[in-house]
Image 1: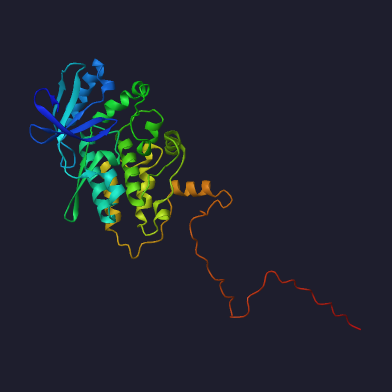
Image 2 (image 1 turned 90 degrees about the vertical axis):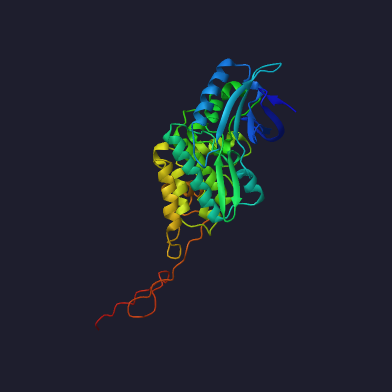
Length: 338
């Protein structure tokens, strides 16, 4: 059993990933995240870790896991940076999606809570950069779900060192939830978090991320160049407004996404409150319509997976027989006077 800085007694590990290892620890019952050993030899990295961890510690919101302390343990070898966080009950959204997928009502609660957390962090110029199911803690309480978003600020630090760490065999981030600009190596901002939230929402609604493939490269290619299938085509029972919300959230151009987390949350709340009994059939947005045309070049305006209604021929005025356009009419011979 190991103790950090003579204060935090590490118990069993709770999880492991690219961001480090999380332990249950004693002092008070907290979660301690210890960063990967590949990062510990770089003093510049440790300085950035302290800076970003302090920024994350400045966030205070019910839907964000609280950061209590940051430190560096000096043991026998290299210094070990660590982050002391609130220990959140429950499991990750990734676990929930595998074991007991959320109900439609819970999906709305979860995505609204994520967006509320982003409203708070973006208002303080803290961009997450790695919104994904594994970074979202879920705890069901009665008929509601409690949501905590984890790893604020640390993802920025990780993305800055991705190239150096890739050489050591460590992969940063999860391709299934990366925005196109992140996949293309460009700077990420608040709208990148909205795209990633859209990917998480798509998976909660349909059971799969918007893009899948045999390799991370194939998935990143999808984010850059493909348009996902409208969720209502995968799950016909879904309300049609989800198509429009996700078409906006998953726009390739950040300028075409929702203005901010508040706008995205309000679009979802407005759609959820609208009556469904009189809702029109789902109409693909321009982004999803483009995907349909690419999928069916021989029928540029019809998607091969969508069922299109057929209409009976309209009756001819007067109620007489309908003309047959295939019938060949032979003219009568002209009558001549004798």
